[in-house]
Image (cartoon, rainbow, N blue to C red; front, side):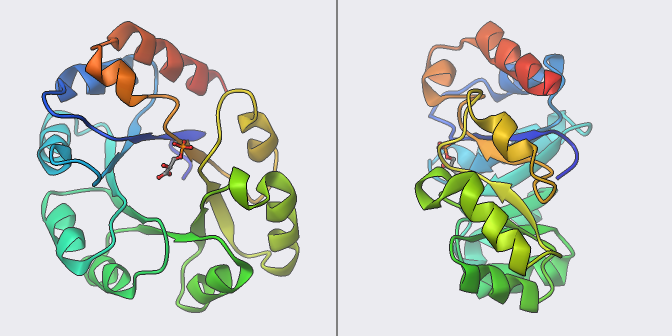
Length: 199
Ligand code: 3PG
């Protein structure tokens, strides 16, 4: 969570040049990526990124099942993200000593993750669930927990989140939008990554 102020959340369409994507992010100074398991191309992209860019933290997101968790752990991911509570995913990650960033939207979900030893959660969907004001309230009762808010964050509101002491980083798809991948817009992805690095 301290590799970059923003973890790019990336959904990979078919036929994406993932090597060009990796170079665009690294050239922009971003050394972390979360590839969501929302498309057919995701797993192969993870394998290729892990193999090609050892200097990059490659994670898998939208991981719900133990089968998915095992597949991404076997692919060598540096971390796993799940959008909500999935104890099978937690078990696989714990057994493999792979860091899990599990999703929570409510105070009870956050307390649940804290009670099983998690030090940080993904607050999702952040903007739709009260944003910065909600996070301040959660931190006042769960001061030991750190948050990676995602959902509805972009360059115009990211600073408000990062200014919270409990938020080392946020996640967001705006850095690498699907349209930029379809258009092979590597220069524009590198530009977005540079803006993130400047944060
Ligand atoms: C996620 O999985 O973290 C979200 O899809 C990211 O939300 P965003 O598209 O609003 O950035």
